[in-house]
Amino acid sequence: MGLIANYQEINTEDLDRIVETIESEVEINLYRELDNLANNESLNQYNMDKMWDSLNFLITEETHEDLSFKSLVTDAIFGSCQFPDDMVDIYLAFVAPDGVCDVADALNDIDIDEYLDEFDMKKFAKHEVYPNIWEHEDEKELIKADLKTCFEDLKEFYTETAKNGNCALVFIG
Figure 1 (cartoon, rainbow, N blue to C red):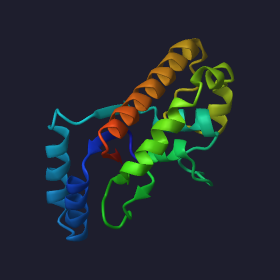
Figure 2: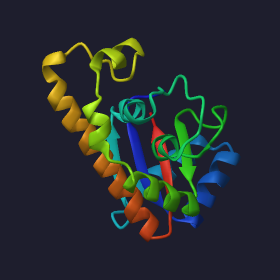
Figure 3: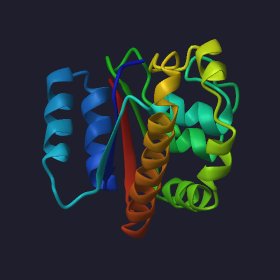
């Protein structure tokens, strides 16, 4: 997995074009398509930076290395339909419009403060959760605040994308 997680609202026509681009194996066109989407200010975008694995672990207690079950939280963070690794050189997945609504509802039902109350940096270190920041115990409150902000921003992204009836594109790289 890469370093930074990005979430991009995308309509079904643009998603179909990305699928066609990937299937045609023209990698340069894929990056052009992703750049065009990133420059479209009328669509929701969210950059979680490096906290994607941490947020997932906080809620599910699984890292990207050991995801053994699918949930709406993992769908929110990693997408529900991943493009095969042999087709793209970054982690790329999406959530279809009906799934976006389910994800938004699930995120809106979560009380993130309950999870943050149980936050244990030693547990994150033991499981080698990305990013490797867990030895900085003096920054615990800052990290908790960052996780809360990441969650709230992700929830807002999916809520707005659901209202628009669009898909969510997830890329980590």
